[in-house]
Image 1 (tube, rainbow, N blue to C red):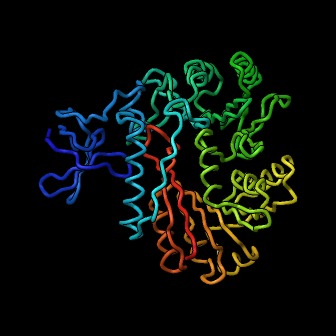
Image 2: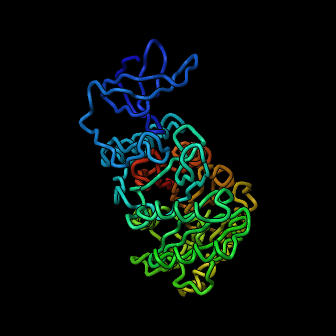
Image 3: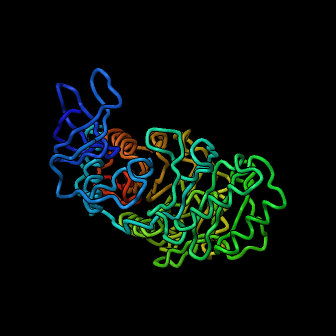
Length: 433
């Protein structure tokens, strides 16, 4: 093993050191620490390694809470204090804006914090039958591997759901097709929890009875999914209540299906919406577009402030859900939703949305480069709020907005949507000077 001093953290939460002219990325190392490490991948200019022994520990090091830490690939930062995690993510965002976009925000926004544990209201667990390793396994993938961790608990899930994992394992192991149930998706709403069993072959009548008994005993709803997400249906069509989450600050209720995209962390989602609307400052009578709007997570709060909202989303199913949510919340007169592929946005397709006072963008990891390039430099919206789940694509798109479209990067900051992980959720404000 080799000794190194950790200098910083990279975007995956790995310690960064320099040894003999090479950059070394060391899992488990924290800035300021002296560690002994073992290399598991070597290239001419860099190495990837794992810390085997901490010679000098950081004051921000904490004991990982999860018994699967170090094996499971789900959480890579449990050894770092949660407040320090947010600070590290803020540096990752600032570094991406500078190194990729050559930009610095005029104002760094305070980090948005929430619960460090029990926050995850969505999860998708892999299921594998591995007789040579003790039978059925349920969990996330192992770090740097396609193997499934045999998880008996998951502290980032709500405690009552985490406690179900051993019994879920027993349930699937006892089905007639345990090797044909490759995943279980969990979705938690304000009043209901749904387990979606992906079944590659039909369940037998006995299987469905066993699943129904499990669901009744554990207070969850059970769904089966024989094909794509749209094929998911409840085993008991009479199951009630429907999945939903509320946004109390805006008097909004959002209904969703368990296979729909929704934010994993309901606590941070509410705070992120609050921050977004503070920055966007929607006013009655303004016309505002919400691009990559999903089922209306930002659209309906904006409409509740009296602005007219044009939502655009690539999924027809989510557009239908957004329309239904708008009607359910009495906001259909202030909203309209359209399906379109925003990754292929053009000047003409953006202009077809009509004149816009402001714009909110919440794209997936790929970012919104086509939208940024399609905005009109003279007649584009005066203010843009960009919610991002990837600092690299945010920085890339920010460079286009500033250098090609004439905007100023007024503010940027992070929301710790996924504590214990290296995932960086962020928000940025752009304005015309």
